Image (tube, rainbow, N blue to C red; front, top):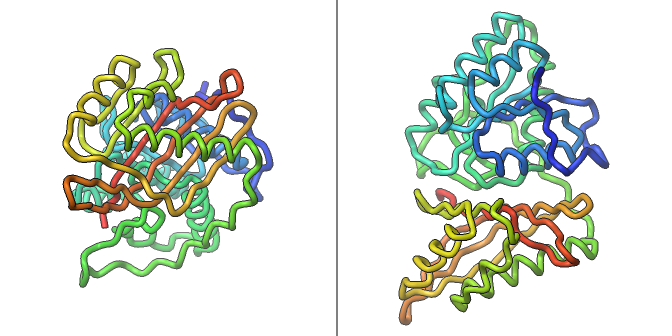
Length: 314
């Protein structure tokens, strides 16, 4: 039987006019849960797999409209899986779009993704609502194409992630992705989530060990930083991560330009985009920065389950 997403967030206020089925292939349980939750909230039916072989079996068993797959997975990587699932579906008369997700951007990924037939490379973390808009646009475009027409040339830029190719690099034409609707005014719970992010940032700037206390008290936490190897998936790992960061001579802080929040009961998701400022002596370095995270409310206070930060390629 295909694995249906069973995360606590359930579909509500569906935004998808026609129910779609999206297959998520991701071996990281925390990120898989977050992504499946947010897609479910937007009215999608979500199937999940931890590896390529499992995902191929699911795609063979029932119709899938789109696929989001990670790059680094056991058994086969995202490129091999993308090529196999597209071949499988084309043999059955279906041409489904595949997006490849990565936490660490490398230029070679774009070439490999294009060769495998992927639509886009998405760099984690990303705003889920923008990806939903891309999925809907791509499915509508394919539905309107004459039977047997050639698939589009995969693009090498990722607009929803804010990445841009170097000046002068030719980019295949692609219709613009519709802008996400303006968010509704924050409700009290959303305000509290934004405040939780501000509180976390304050502790980071002050190099305060209380940063760790903002995370859930049990072992099921995950922090992913910008650099390769910056991962903490236990309380002890989180403490070690902070000790390493705080030992550096510079102080860092976040300046957010946009923050988006969604919630269902005692679980919330946030995406924020802005800049990371690193100050050492009199010099301040500014870098683009974005994050996504999952929080749970315990005893009236929001605690972090997942924090994923990233410096996007510009």
